[in-house]
Length: 103
Length: 103
DNA sequence: TATACTTATTGACAACTATCGATATGGCGC
DNA sequence: GCGCCATATCGATAGTTGTCAATAAGTATA
Image (cartoon, rainbow over all chains, first blue to last red; front, side, top):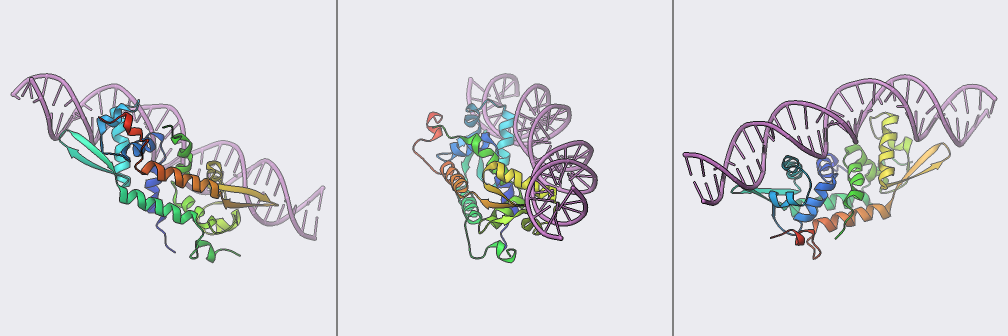
């Protein structure tokens, strides 16, 4: 067993904020620009920029520049990978980390 | 739409730590006592107690006293609920939060 | 080109987090 | 009851996080 727990820590950190959870939900349907996302919240522009950087750095969100605008989408491959990782650690398994521990 | 994002923030905070991710993986197979978990890490007893409190408070882990020992298990109902929440926010949906935003 | 608009960066700051050693609490066995 | 063991709590501390206003940088438009 050699799961790369550390690799997922920044992802769960990215998910540990109400604003960012809502942004992910918003992006699940369609690409949105930062100014559009900003309208949904009562936060400053610099704060949103900070949140978008955390989401991009974690890999959950793709960012692309379109002229003056930044357009964001969910990174589906990454979000699915996180789903799989989480499913794996919460599920009973044969190669369990505890086999070398128990008793 | 009225997802309770805030309710899940403590859960993702609990998942935002390598030690705690590993503990969850360990508990996925069987109940373990704190002293047993401690053996797997190079952390102090007080630090483990702190981590177990965060995991219990988030609802991911059940704690029960057995004499002098604390025994921990995964809270399967809760971990599944978190899986469902995460699946929902990353998936395209008809009642999307962005329907009232886009255009 | 000048002005307005969109986003990123910086610096400051208060709040929170992870860690430890020391100490307290509570159960077990003698 | 006493001493030991397992766990929880406390106080201190260094590092991280979320927020803002101010400012910078890049783009669009008139």
